[in-house]
Amino acid sequence: MDDFNLPGTLHDLEKTAARHLWFHGPEESWEELTEHEGMRVFARGEGSTIWDVRGRAYLDGLSGLFVVNAGHGRREIGEAMAEQAGRIAYSAASTCSNDAAVRLAGKLSGITPGDLSRVFLVSGGSEAVESAIKIARQAQAMRGFQGRHKIIARRGSYHGMTLGAMSLTAARVEKFHGPFMYGVSHVPSPNRYHNDFGLAGEDGDLMCARYVEQEIIHQGPETVAAVIGEPVSVSNGNHVPSPRYWQMLRDICDRYGVFLIMDEAINGFGRTGKMFAAEHFGVVPDMMVIAKGFSSGYAPIGGVIVRGEVFEGFTGDGKPIEHLLTFGGHAVASAAALRNIQIIEDEDLVERSARSGAYLMEGLHTLESHPTVGDVRGIGLMCSVELVKNRETRESWGWTHAFTKDLAERIRDRGLLTRVWGVLHLGPPLVITRDEIDSIIGIIGESLTETENRFASEIA
Ligand SMILES: Cc1ncc(COP(=O)(O)O)c(C=O)c1O
Image 1 (cartoon, protein in one colour):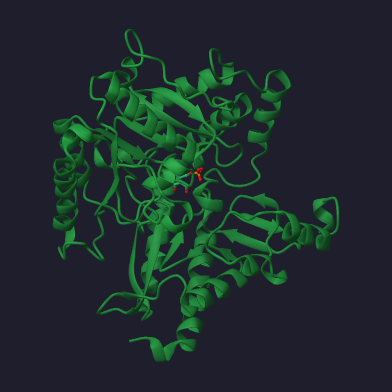
Image 2 (tube, rainbow, N blue to C red):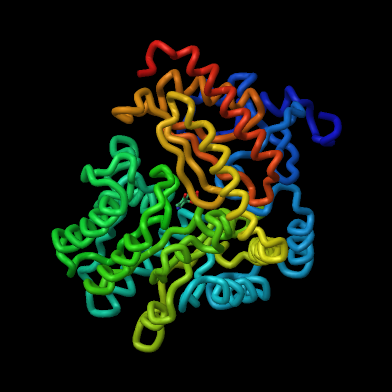
């Protein structure tokens, strides 16, 4: 504790957090979050490890929340931010900009696929999704299609928590936060373990693509502005679709004049073993949402990058977008993102993610001897283990079952931070080492054995 030089005692910090800080997470009850032993207030990080104020070390198996791609403790990012803050930290986003935001926009247009070239900078993923929705609607209206306001999202999707982004998120809670934005529908998403159509393999993916066309026709193409999806959806459990799925979606959107938005909030910046996951599928979306690994969490920043032709609508006879966000293109956040991208490039973290991801998957496959491991899947350093009661029927435990909570606790007590829902998620920093991956597999394996022993009578 003293090592960290923190003001206040350990006890003070935990007590103050319990009394005054409002945790965002919906996964655990307030009591679970704030009970003494469960409290995790972090004070230091390096690479893939973080330490809490008690000095307990944890392997960060989720990069925070799929954020810290470049790893913890990157002083060079802090130094770039300090240098920027010492010169100019902020300039208004309305009619001017700053050197860091301009350099960042240029950099992004160089590394994103195809002709994605115009960058709208914001402060995070939800804001980026909100921005994409508004850009899509206004661009459609300015093309003469004022009735095109609907958005098609996918079942199991997650696109953020502000009201518009939450409207696209499948697990939205109508009774607390509804009514939601009008005109959003959710269609089946690729899932080869529980396919909505009872189809196996690629056939299931392609039926999901055909369903999107059906939905556009059903809603009326003259009412649909955009289709949005994560190239590989983490919230839906990391099902990697066939490239033909995304290529069909691209064709369908083109045929009906609908924008295709890829949400790369998690997928982007090397997470999947490519700089952007769209590259796996050979598809260029009309708009790409970026966040999270964009700055590896060193500053809050997100963005939407649109194709040249989408932006053209906002010039000439078109109207500028009415979407002024005070912190859009923040200079210090932009400097953090620029330095982060430089690290990803200099240290070949994209390639390293692909290699380490393959090694992690190998390790996870060894867990298939456990009776509750139904499926192992993923891409790059974005992997999942689907936990089931019954491998024949593939019945899930569900995220509130005592089995799931018991497993989550054992894993955490052994010093690994992950997310254990019906599916156990992994997304460690791209700098993770082989030894650390071995530790992850060891911790999950031991914890699974103990939890399975405790719940043996319920396992088919
Ligand atoms: C795919 C996706 N889109 C958008 C968001 C929202 O990002 P933020 O939490 O930064 O608002 C998230 C966050 O988890 C996400 O996973």
